[in-house]
Length: 280
Length: 270
Image 1 (cartoon, each protein chain N blue to C red):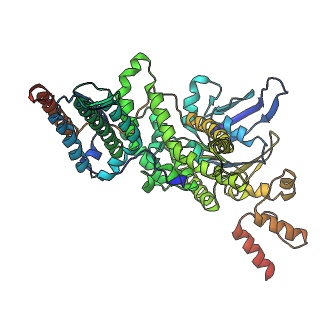
Image 2: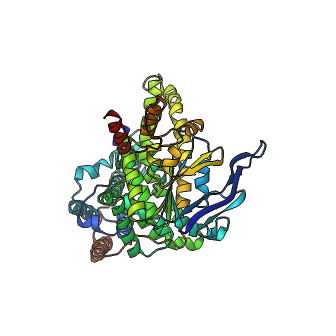
């Protein structure tokens, strides 16, 4: 599969005038392939958001380089090409909605790209249908719930028809219902419309659904692998200050008690099956 | 509650006036104001008065709502009236010390009051029947020629849009901060004016901090959606003049003509 985003010896530090520079990312080499659903995990201050901001040239590396579909993000004249290819959704849905009407907001990026009005109309309706917000198209943003607002923000990005969507903790400010709505939308985009997804999160239950997980700690990539490979290393995750899904935790503790339970249980269905077997 | 405040005064509806192009409505409102000040005869005042009353009837906006717009400027109206009554010289009717009231004074005052009241009612009708976003679009379109003299038309419109977008958000936030400060024992209801203004500080500072943070995040989100100013930008919603707009313009032109004819031929009281 084609490499959509790749970083080569990516190094980033905040340059400060009077104090010492702060090293945030240190020699990161990762790649995200077309159609993949990648989750980036890490605790607060691990550098995961900083990493995400390199994917669409919001931040530029202080060392090494980032390639998006073969384009070096450091090329100033290609910035808008890159941003159109890699859409970005942020944490606070309120602070990314620009217009006073839902459909106007979804149209914002397309208007910026100078697309014909008729085509904008088509793409806006299409994007709103994909996130299941079509019937709200004439609402004002403040009449919507957090999850709905975040879905509008996602529609605003997918209307650009990007190849990849980077979501920087999109559910951190939402209630459980909103979180589920947003996660379902993201998964649907990945599975049904084969949009590449990079989900930055600290919710393990969300990361479970990814094809691949990248764990970042202190500016380094410390683990990569499938959710099953990552979460089965319960002790290592705890060392990094991260959790594992509740079902994995449960099985891990049962195992510590000497019960014959596998390590790589990550979904609730698997867990119930294992417990059923134990009880029989 | 702060949350109940409506933004702008838009009254959604489907009337002919609601459906007119916002640019035409804006232009006609300006023409209406000019007409109000062109009226020179007493009988001529009937034209703008009847015109507006008919327009309000067509728009199906309750007359009470339109009249409500006058309330805040009542002091200004009274002030203008009093000033005109006492300071316009002419045949004295009543003399009381150094104050004289003349017939001319009363007439001039009356004209001014009618003009101000109908000016306010006319512009209220515009904001009642046009959504803020349509109005912003109209202003951006109409001011476009000013781009040639480097006037930042697009930036102005963008600022208006963002302000309109964030007013409800910030109101909600103010509400939250007020509750939070009250929970910490802040007292906002008692004390004199000075004390109450002082009590606003713990509300305003967090509000400003949060507004700046929002601004920064919004700017980033806009950049990520390829925003680069007004150049090369298209709009999804295109404004179109329809037959309706030309009818409206024709009505206005006719009324204006009547006003001018009356100015030339109708007798005035004085």
